[in-house]
Length: 545
Image 1 (cartoon, rainbow, N blue to C red):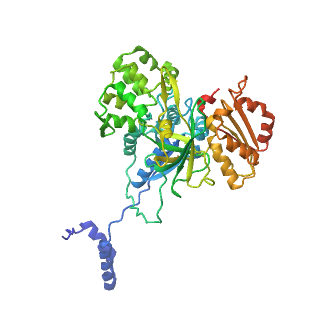
Image 2 (image 1 turned 60 degrees about the vertical axis):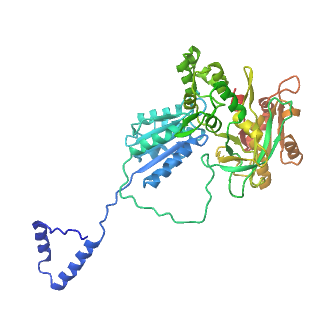
Image 3 (image 1 turned 135 degrees about the vertical axis):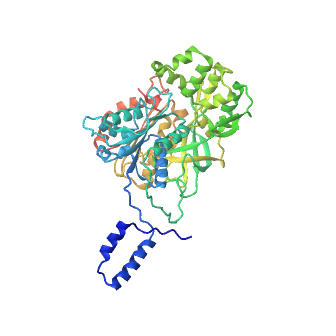
């Protein structure tokens, strides 16, 4: 159907007549075709300058980074100009020209930001920090409510940005361990505050050579178990095992110092006692994140039952009226709360307060099953298409029962030929020196020695000329000297120049790694003066002063 043509008004016709007055006939004929051609062209759009939306993350275990990356990908798909960067790479002066920014930051230790972005926080707190009145921002803070300084880094960042004149585009979200549930709707609300994309060009994806995306927690890679062997004797206080897992060439890339994340199910040894304590039909349906599944499925596959969180205690305190629980939840008792949560499991609470929570309330109170990260104990150069782990089984005596670790118990039961989902968690702060002639000093009590097995293998395989010094500690040489044969052989062959050990239960005097460090102080200083790199790995609670 033809469009209805409207004649121009008198004023327009008058201007046209004046412009055409006196032109020869051939010019008028040419102009008629020119004007007709203009009319047939599609309407032009005026290019609208798109503001840049900056997304910055501060991440210790990778959760904040993955949330930031996912958000950036969604915004780019909608035509937004997006800048994605770690806070570790952000200079304060880069904020002065920005109008929109999202900050996704986690909290570590005693309320500290992630290690690699602490210098940014220090610069932001300085008196010389610039005014940021042109900036609209939002903060997504990640944390664990069982710790005293919950989301402290995010709160600190939010307060400082506001003090510098920046305007909050959306209220801060403090996301607990269930951030996978709470973050997406908040991010959608923040995204709705952004200026709409105008005249966004369509982007055509051009097919390229087939590529394989790296495994993620959401889409892990299935690794096949090759072997699962004990590293300790039956007399050791804690059983430690060595696992070797295989993958197809090119499926899993890692570097020495990285960690392996694992997707696992809670083993029956943890699930069945919980169901018995609840005295509820295991097949009772419950709702979880929009899915209907049985209570047993939820406890086994989707929920954390070996680690406690604050929401569960809040539910128990509310429905039981227990004074002790209510006292623990007071802000002044945050230290006691953390110790209580660390020393108990779900089963303990269900036995202490039976019948208080029904199946749905319990499911609503438990955090999602969390990833577990293990330091990689292998070298990609020596152990091609394999990744090795050093796993200590958690079996802690709590009250009158043995508390089991969920992932370590599942791994101990894994048989050769079976599979487990995995992905690599890079650790850029724990890398071998780029200069192969540099000496390295490795300090690793207990399973903290795991990454150094990969370090030494990689350096030996690539022909690094630097020297190696290992400090290792355990209880007894005969029971839990992890990888003893490998270290002693490397020392005999000159691949491990120094090996300093401490066995705290051998002999009358208890000797620990720190004692060996003090005894070797003079030689340590010589190595350090020569440019040696120092590495420390181990249980943060056990090594804390």
